[in-house]
Length: 183
Image (tube, rainbow, N blue to C red; front, top):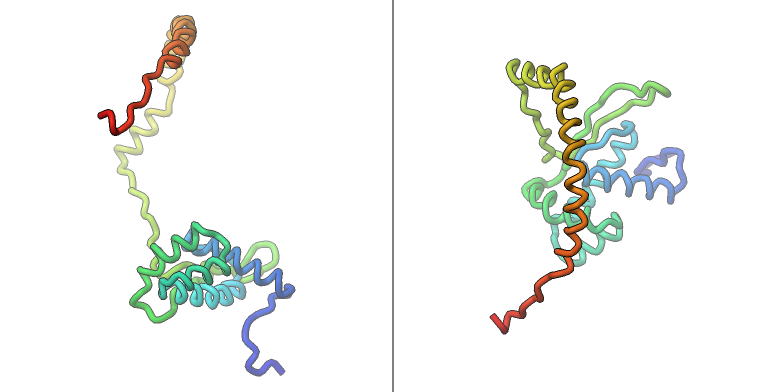
């Protein structure tokens, strides 16, 4: 009987499972939203809640513990400087899980795990006039412009070569830096 046994083994050895969740946790903190299976998402939620609670302490010891868990300096910095301050008023429940259906190959239930503070960037919707201008810019007149540009490039190609030879001479003559005391 499995009474009072917490956690999911997910058919993996301990080290493999720990490394997998470390990588998933780093990805979650970096992108603030990831897609995975439902069982992994529910287990990842536990890991994320613990590391964010640790980050809310904002002590040197907590930073070192977080680095020992995550092994990524930039993510630890983001966790302590950006994510934890947003969560300071929350007592827990830092992640949200959406069910997304089933995976095509094996039918595994998929889910979307995101931080509660995640805000989806909305793209600016283009008006019909802007769409029409974009389409018009992509059609035939460019061919005529390209032919004219190619003729212009052939004439100007000889001139830049001469300038290229003169450019290195200018680079050799650099003024010496003056110290602050001389100014």
